[in-house]
Image (tube, rainbow, N blue to C red):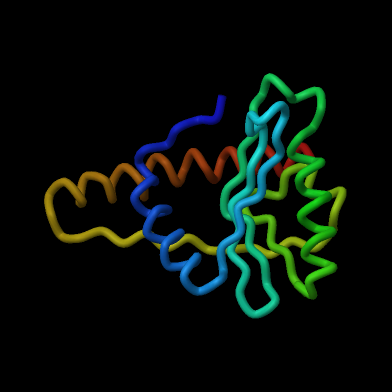
Amino acid sequence: AFINRTDRNKFFRLLSETAQSKGWLSIWYVYKDKEPIAYEYHLTYKGRDTALLSEYNSDYRNFSPGAFLDHEIIKSLFINGVHEYDMCGVHDEYKKKWTDNVRIYKNLTVFNDSLYSGLLYFIEEKPVRLIKRIRNRMINAGN
């Protein structure tokens, strides 16, 4: 079954309402016997499509519902004149089948001046950043 991430539900509900009202929102599904087994959540603006979320039911992993969905999405975007498709996230192995072009993004995290936020800042900026740097170096060393 799909993972329920309640911590981001409010954000995506508000984003979805705005994006839908402006015609930017696309949600793509693959069904098996009326059961959704894969989905992708996209925003399209000025000929650029961005895949923000994707998920699939791991019970169907052997059937590659995500790869099938990617193929159908890219075909539809091409037919409809979209000139850029950003798969977002890390440069996963399956994405390399579609392109060699990689766009590097920067993250910006903003904290307010409360004690709790100060603690979160310390946790995020110190050990978590260090762990991520080490992990990325290990991944890059393996390529």
